[in-house]
Image (cartoon, rainbow, N blue to C red):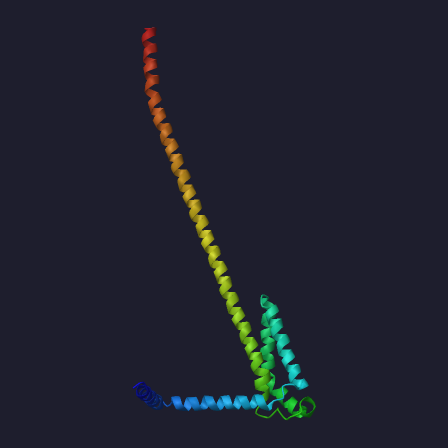
Length: 203
């Protein structure tokens, strides 16, 4: 029963994708299998121990370490990001240059006019590093926003404390003034009676 339900679900999904003009699930799986096979063939065809490939790998590794070390310096990261994009834009001229001198660089004709090899081993890692820098920028921006929000909350708390202290001091002052007035009111009748007694004695 489970197999039949899965088959009916796959058939219904394939019909829906076909109506939308999109590849069906089976076609998608076939394309993924072909892409994986082509990737494995590409990896097997390249001699990764050649000096050119080792030098390129060392270049990418050093650049990645540099990006990690300077992750907290915004200006350096910005210039590095611009340099990475510039190198990606220069991939096509570099590909033509490597085609011209590929007998000196590599033992096999890796570089072709379609630029598949240089896009895979040169441009793709640079784009990944540029994406890492962008993510670092976003993380830093979020951290700065958190710091600013915390500062605003602290200032608001300080203002509330000051207002509470001012209110408390004002209430204390008002209570003192009320107490003084009551004392003054209590002393004034006594002084008037004393004055009357003195007038009687003089008479």
